[in-house]
Amino acid sequence: MNLKELRNMDRDDILEMIGLQRKASTGSFLASALSTFGIGILVGAGIGLLMAPKSGRELRENLRDRLRRVPEDINDTMNPIGRDPLGTGANKAY
Image 1 (tube, rainbow, N blue to C red):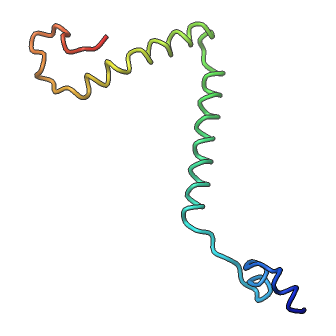
Image 2: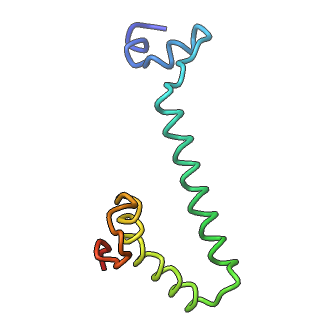
């Protein structure tokens, strides 16, 4: 091995020559694990929607209704219980 070949080697090549390897960082491991978990969630949700006992139209209407209720549910969660004593719904956003 001459000096020219040594200059063309990177860190991994040199470590491999002496029988070592770099340790993977925790961040790269965590990112890999979280991306795999996220893909699994998306695949599971897709399979769940495909296997649902409702027709496509019913499922879309159900999802649309739930998404429309999200702001109201957030307001209900964020507002204290005693704000609307008469139960008029004046605090609810429509």
